[in-house]
Image (cartoon, rainbow, N blue to C red; front, side, top):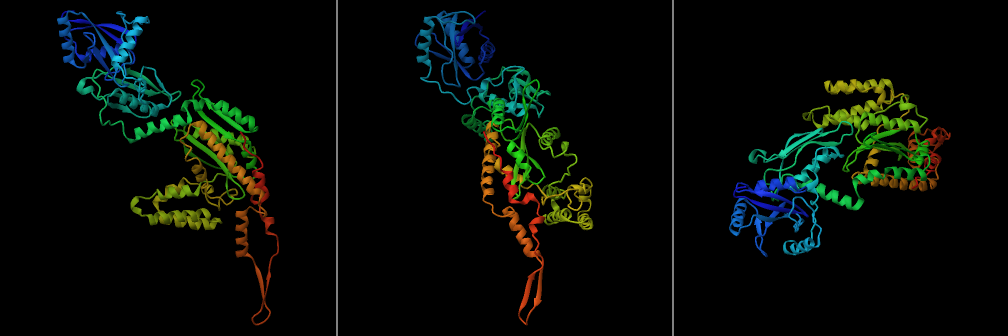
Length: 563
């Protein structure tokens, strides 16, 4: 060890002995410390040493290392104590002890006295914890799992890079894999690198390769960082606020079995079906249909409308829902489900459970006629034409399609479809080829449409959950339950105050139709006197089905949702 000295580095009661030669650089010393002390990150700590009582020196560059070795030679010392400080937290986190041994803990009374002395001497009077204080441990080892998948790993990696003071350069970045290296790989030869990919079994992201020591000096606290944009900052603030108000995201999933058990106890006959991964126990999907909804549907028109909307919480997902229409043309919830993604398999699973609880409908609704939403079909027609076609033509084509859908006879439908094709030509030919007329046209629909041509009422449900879709899972479930419980209670009270035969909306609609279509017999009595008699005195309410009547409306809300 020619022209070299021994150094005792101390970090949190742990001490290691290393040799420092005249050829050692400051960066080499830092890299060696990061490899020996767990939790140290380059650029996030400081080094100080003392040559005489009451004085300290900073070790921060190659010149400092050379000067330290020169001074040690002058004073005749072969061993120097070097203290490690956490630069990011602003406190002396790890303190020296009296023990001069390699990798050992010391707990004697002398060491405690020295700790208190050095704390007053170098440390602040209190520890201030930043939101980023834990980010430096976010990326740790090969095999580390990120249950939130690609988005979870990507977000964690960005926070790790911000805390450790370096910029990322992505080599591969898609939904199944992410590979990144330090941006100073080319300029400084930094070896830091990470590779993670999606597990095909549970969609978790797992770190496959990791070189977690930087051989460059990190870019500490730059005024501008490409990662720290508005979206990044907003997501941190959002996560912090949600966490403080509602609790932990993962814990909300752990409470699901208790939530289901409690609801079944107070709402017997309800259907709750929870599915998790067979090996990972990861949440897959949850089906919910309260007994009050199941029974109430029997007094609504025998028609189900289904739709879905996105969930905006940390782990995302999709909310599927199924509703009917009551006698007053209002939405009546039948069931809903939380799924990890909107796939054909998840839709089949959702509909298969519906077919079990609504026994009047055959398995998978195979014998029940299906109808497409006219609003969505019109939107699809609009998208068929190029931008240069003009809005006027697009609106005309949407109206022509509506004429086809509302045509009441087969001959009227043929005339309307001919006009539609004549105006749309090649743009609509393939569209109609994949669109069975039985699924949208009244003239060819094999069942009753009950006056419904679209599921536009689904926007009511979307609006209801618009502010709760970003909530934790438990809060989302409770928000839906409470809102629909209150809505059912209000409609139950409303139904008790209906004093007409039909529901108010349908009663008014029928009166207008009677006024327009009533037949009168008019006979002259004198030059300016006429006798007017109603031609038909039959009771028109006999021809109205029970689904529109106030009695059925009241039966729809005879049951309530409890907790």
